[in-house]
Each structure stands twice: as structure tokens, then as C-alpha cells.
Image 1 (cartoon, rainbow, N blue to C red):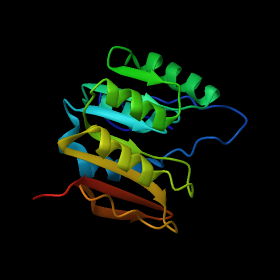
Image 2 (image 1 turned 90 degrees about the vertical axis):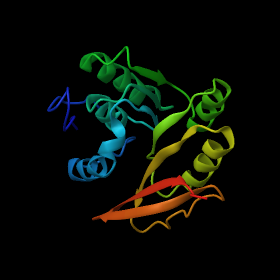
Image 3 (image 1 turned 135 degrees about the vertical axis):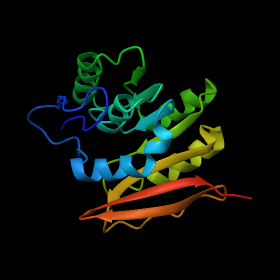
Length: 186
């Protein structure tokens, strides 16, 4: 895994050794994802849920995001995430949270944080996207012109959204499908 563009282009990311907890995003999928959202990245506030080693959130910071919260509950993965933030020199812009993603949403909601870009990349086939999107809407965590980007296995059913936050686009890349969610326009 590596950063593919921006200030830290080409820098490798550490990942936990010896076990398969994370599902790193393939470079071509990540590049396609960022090509779609690139105009929104510079100066943005980003939330990376189920962050793993931070591939998506750190890519956003490398490309000019102003601030990024990265959330992962696995201790070994979180240790790599913290080291990746330090190694890239992104400490001032990144806040890492070692906790359950839904608890993090509660905490960020109480702090009245608002995000322009939210990445949701949970373990495949766990049905974790619907409750996350519902919580994001309920707590007002997505900026009015913000976007949520999800990643699922292509054989999983695509979540259509809530009454307010809807699926506006989806793209397939091999066995991976990206979903893009925004507030429904009035």
C-alpha cells in the first residue's frame, strides 16, 4: 500500500504483519475514487471510518485535505495507522481514534464536527454501511454539499440511502463497487 498522489506521493504505508484484518484498497480503485471526488478534496474536512491503516484518509490529506479523523478499533491496525500518520508528517492534520466506528460517530456528533468527505470502508458482507449512513444523517455529520464514499464487494447489495442522504452514483471495478451518497436535492 502506498500514497498515490499529492505531497506524500509514492510513500509506502505500514500494515500489520501476520494476519488479515485489513482489506487494502487497490491502487487503481483508489485512483478512480479520487479522480471522481478530486474537486472536493482540497481544503476539506474528512472522516475515514473503518480506516484500517489509513489509506483513504491519508491519501486525502496528501492531496490537500485540511483535517482528517481516522477511526479503527483493532489495536494492531491502529498502531500501524498512528505510525503512518507520524511517518508522513501528517500529525497536525490528522486525529486517530482507536474505537468502534459507531461510537466515534456519537463522539464526533457531540463535538458538532461536520465533514465534507466521509469514507466508509467496512469489512465486506457485514451490513455496516446502512447504520453508519443513518447515524451520519441523524447527527448532522455530513456537510450540506458533502459526499459519502463507500466500498463494498460487487456481490453485495448496494444500499440506496436514507430519506435525506441518497445513492447518487456507483462504479464497479472488478470485485469492488464504490458508492457515492449525497443529500437529496429539494
